[in-house]
Image (tube, rainbow, N blue to C red):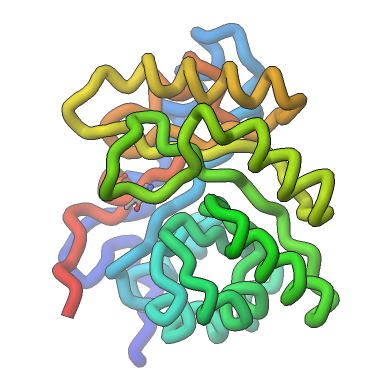
Length: 235
Ligand SMILES: *Cc1c(COP(=O)(O)O)cnc(C)c1O
């Protein structure tokens, strides 16, 4: 694997400039929403990007990254994390229970806890590996059949199960609004569910809508294409 010191990636995208632009945008959005500059952290979503294209983003100072497939992440992150021990890796895609062991070993934050079977498997595995990962509960705010996430009406009970009964380190909630709907309604709903459950973390907002998400209180925005450029197709 040839890793270069260039700020551009293999597609010629200046990822360092993109990263700086996104960070400036986040700071401006936080300020205009009357929030502190560091209140919304950037998770750089590196799915489909190879290690050589991720490295310039690390070198530009980015420390939080998101991947949505366990197996894909296993192919590139162990070496990147070994070389950069302060990186934190978030799982932002659906997690199958047969991948829980690998996910707990590799990731630092699981943003997609969304069903009792998974929550129980995570609690067991974290105990076994003695690794307590921060967790977010994914809420299917759009009530889309094909999408992951606990339904809004079931969220309170599920949060209680994950946090209070199973002892997971639940930091907040995560959502992916339906593409064709007004995102602010979904961000507001997620914030309301978090508030009534005493949770501070809100992972919401992607390349197209992170400014709105910050207005609605996002503490984590997950941005991919605005940093890395167009995604590569999965093999
Ligand atoms: C891919 C992905 C993102 C980033 O999407 P962009 O539009 O590229 O910013 C954010 N969140 C999740 C869950 C994703 O799968």
